[in-house]
Length: 140
Image (cartoon, rainbow, N blue to C red):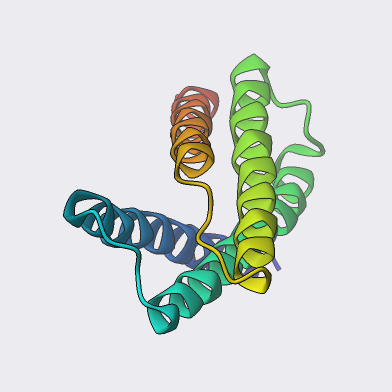
């Protein structure tokens, strides 16, 4: 069971990271060009957002399962709690961003660029906390 959870966990990291990096690169290209993406690209962004959110949820599910299987719970160490804080920040921001984009698409308007920029910055902070926390928590 541990191997299955790890494989799903690693694929979730791959999908969440790919969606995040790819989405940001494409969005920045449109921002630099001063253009709004056409509707079909907006729909693709929405799909990428759902894939990313689903991947993050799978990361949580498999991560909690692995923590219980390997360490007997979530009380591993302080650095692991920093990792959880970063992961919670990423999950919350991803869910909020997906809701915002969905509402914008429903209203046939672009997402708020200032809000989206802040959400990306917050997501980056969450990723840094999660990655650094994991590096310290699982070292040695």
